[in-house]
Image (cartoon, rainbow, N blue to C red; front, side):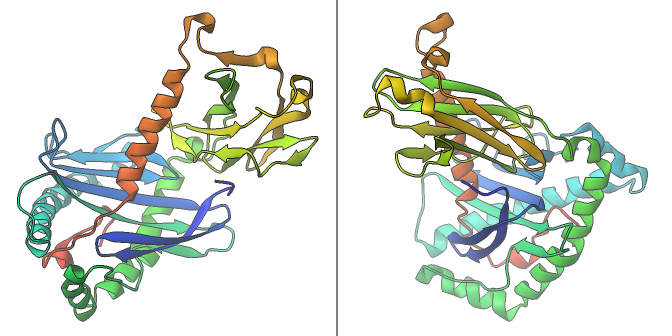
Length: 333
C-alpha cells in the first residue's frame, strides 16, 4: 500500500500465484485473460490489456473483435496494418484453448457442474532508468496441489519457461516501449486528486479519500504533528476509476482522540515527481451521511465492489491444460 510503484516478479502456481514486490518507478504491460462457465451476463472469454494500469485493448467472446480502448492505440496501425486482425485471430484461438483448459482442469479436480473460472496473467515491467526487466510469467513453476503436478512436469519438459522468458524480456518489453511512445501525452501526464474527508457515523473512522489522480504511483497516508502514523490506520489499495484515473483511501480511528486535537492530524498525498499535498483534518470539512442529500455509504460500497473485482482478476486459477503450449499472449510471440 505504501509503495510508489509495484515492481517484482510473480511465479505461476498451478491453481495459484505467488508474487514478490519492491518499490521503484517502472512502466508495465499486463494482460488478463478470463474464461468462465455458468457466469450469468458475462462473456465466456474476456481478454484485456493494460499499460501502467490504463486499459488499452479489449476482446470478448460476444463481440469477437480485438479493439482499442484508447484513441492513441489506433496509431499502432500506421506501421503495422494487420495489428488488430492478428489480435482478433489470436483471441479467437485463445478462446478455444481456454475452453479446453477448463474442461481438463475439471477432469483433474473431479468436478462436473457449477461455476468455474480459468484465468491467466502475463506481462512485463521495465525500469526506463536502470533498464531492468521483470516479468509476470516467471521461470519456475510450482504445483501447490497434487492435481497440478502433471502440468508442472509437462511445462518443464516442453521448455515453457524458456519461451516465457523470451517473451517477457524481448517482445513484451518492445511492445511496452512502442505503446509508451504512442501514448506519451496520456501515460506520462500528472493529475492531482480531489481529496475529501468522509465519515459514515460519529463513531466510525475518518476516511481520507483521494480520487482522480494519475498515474497510480502514489501514496496516501495520515500524520500527527508531521509524523507518519502506522497504528490506528487502515490503508486501502489503489483502485482504478472508470475514466482511467485512480483512487485511494486511508481510514483513521479517532475514537479516543479529543475533538480539540483533531487538527493535529493531516492526510498527505504523494505523487511521483509532484510536491506533497497536505490536507489538515478539520471537523467542519468532514462529510457524513445526509449532507447535501448524499449517502456516502455508497462510496464504501463502490470501493468494496472494485476491490472484489480486482481481487477476482488477480487471484489466478491457472489450472492448466495439455494445450497450454499453444497459448499466445496478447503481445507477439
